[in-house]
Length: 133
Image (cartoon, rainbow, N blue to C red; front, side):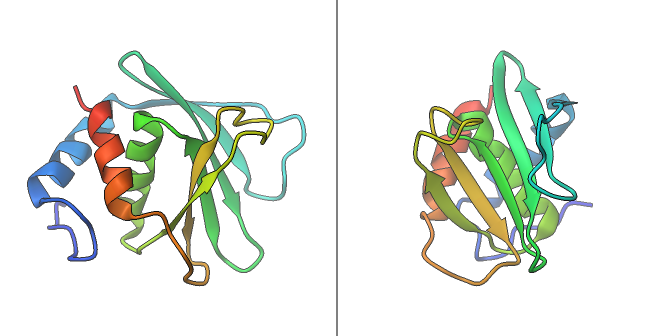
């Protein structure tokens, strides 16, 4: 089931097809959390070729979902694939260094929350391109 990306997504449809095509090569291994933040909180170590990234899914009490990833190319790709799965426009935010599980900083995509200021989606797309072989 391959639908063309909605107009709200940056980039051309061919690039989104390349992102979708790489999905079967992505491997995720669940990480044990010493103290989960709440019900449904999940953390994974994700691998694609030689790249790795941490990904966390943190459901909010308001029905929103924060997906937090390491701030590299694979992390950006994971956020775009999540967007593709959900087909709803996320709000992207940077996370500065200092969060214990993301010492080098992170990117958050919030789905289902109130609209707000967001990093430009094109920046996430441009970074994700570097994850492609």
